Length: 417
Ligand SMILES: [Zn+2]
Image (cartoon, rainbow, N blue to C red; front, side):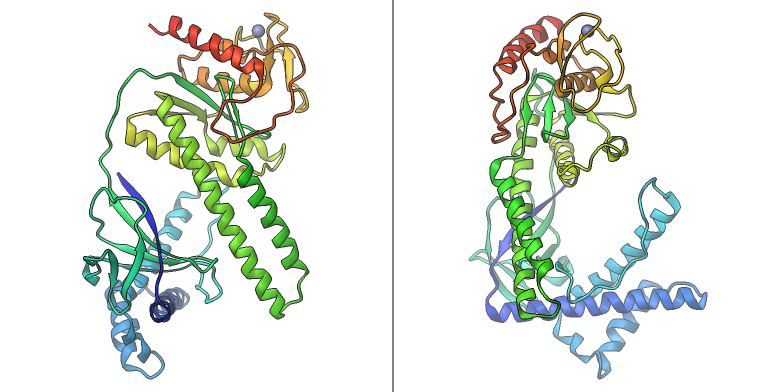
């Protein structure tokens, strides 16, 4: 399988100028390619081939006065920009023919200098390398200092250099990783993606985004509000925009850290993980409330997927199934829908007290055929205390939760062969 590894780059002022030139040239070639495709489409002729585009937009363009500066950039970078434009059109046509439900299909757009993210890709042909003093050697850029925060598991063939909206530089490598299945007896768990909590587990744990992430999100909101109040085209607006970009980057980093931590923990602890299919789940929830977690779940689930593949764990997706809040996870009695504010209720069939979110997580696991016990959904009849929602990876401070974690593991053992 392929994994992406990112490392922070610290280009010198001269290298920044060279990189800006590379971003600019790649963007121009990309836009020229998009324009050529559109022209061909409007004229009703076949789309130009890659080699045609390469000759017209790179080789010939270098001889002209208005594109002569293309010679200042590695030819491989320009070729990759053509390939990106081609890929963008392929994706567009694929999406058009597939017409995935609910997904809007847009024609590839022109790139702008104003875009937050700028990128260029160097392939093996570009003869990029890592120098003996661990710098990243890029053609026509120079030897760029890198902070190697991790060890690459194998030698990558290409590197993408990215400048993000906050003005930071990264080298991004795609490397081939061999999955190492570690098979040992571990429990199986159901995960409910909640509205109040980031996730709720069938063993009773409720996990919230950690405080540092929520604080960063608050700061981002404030920065965005400030920006919207600034006058257009003013110096202060540019400053406010830079501030928003930095706040965005901090939120994104904090969120990624949280997702990595939590997904690693769940994969390490469990042999199989069941959750609702995000597509189905999304449709079901839009009517209820737009949750702040919406953006986060997709990337979190993607991490669970690749870590599961890497460590020989099983991810089980549940499609449409019975509304989880209507069914008792212990006795399967269906006692009707309950309004959202009802967090705890007593089952009319067996008399057990059920926590809405934990009950849902257990039902998810059961629908996936996992060996979790319904007992996990029991709560005491006292009203549920408000969650302080501290750092997600620890078990919640609800006393009743601890009680049924203990109950669950005992039951789990007796129920699994
Ligand atoms: Zn019941």
